[in-house]
Image (tube, rainbow, N blue to C red; front, top):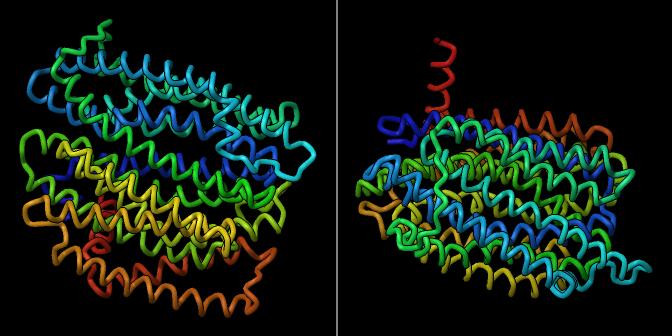
Length: 527
């Protein structure tokens, strides 16, 4: 049974809708990167912005992100199934009230402590430049301004969780597009007047739009806010128990980015911005092939787990993992081959020059190595969350964070900022392997089954054939590998050619996921 057949037909529609939302959001995310690169290049001022946004992201992920991803949806799904809407809305209200208050309190603490925390995160920011002190002050100011964003996202993230748990995906999938559009607007319309502060304004406006866009769906679902902070409610206590470990796990994931920022701050004026541009590009396929599928299946996983149907949980996780690997493994290899024309086509405009392109491309190479692992973690972790186990993935996330820190310190010397990307990729691969091995032993029948092994083997063979085809194609296009003004043509031909080679090879080997895609396409044209 694959993830999109039989009893999981509802997930198919959700996955398509969430996938389309992620596609739109990631396309706008790519356009956001283009707009930022065009206006700011890889300047020291942009480095200050990237440093500043780390703490607001951390505030949101520690509280709202923890509740949404791991704790709230399974408990809320259980309330809907067993207690009805009235009790479910009461639970949602109490959790929402506490998340909002907690986020405001944490944001206030960070606001007061920003002048000490921010310099400690990036002590090398502006090192050697005459305006180093001004850059540090700018980073502190921008951090404080953007702390409005996690407060808005705390409410918006909870609403997303409520709607997804009730199988409403349209507006939650649409909301991130507005967030990206606002940042694009800040870069394009406000950069001349406000500099990087225009980006901060875009972040705040975008988070407000992210919230406002979902309100109609919440009202249509019949949400009734209860002014209660009752911690004695059993569901609230369960959310808190599940939330605690996940807070640590999400903090660990954010600390990984802080670690990269810390070491990159010593690697020159463009290092932090180049690292973030490469990371933004990587997030596009991770969102499509990992996050979208994981978000789509999670409410159904939680519902199946609430009914103690662990067999259905295993089949859903295994099927989704196979499909994720089928998509993400070739995507990572394709990015390795196409990284230079990709970066040049997307970013090399305006203030973003060829030197910046070369640096971002070299970093993207090492990030792409871990693409499949980033995608797999999104799926595997949801399997643990649905079973009510947040401790195991958190333990592995903390272990990966420590490994990333050690590897970053070791690799930054010989490889520079590229070593930081490699450190994160290696740590992520180790984390994904541990999650797979542990969940395999946790679920009856296991995850490492013949269908998964077969899919992986055939995927690797098809990916190798695609890589060989791209090698020959690029030798024909340009023996030097320096495509220059032909970057867009090389990217287009490489993407289409690589996809065709991979998909045909998969069909010839009768890979189930490739056949499923063919069946879906045929059914669409048959209607």
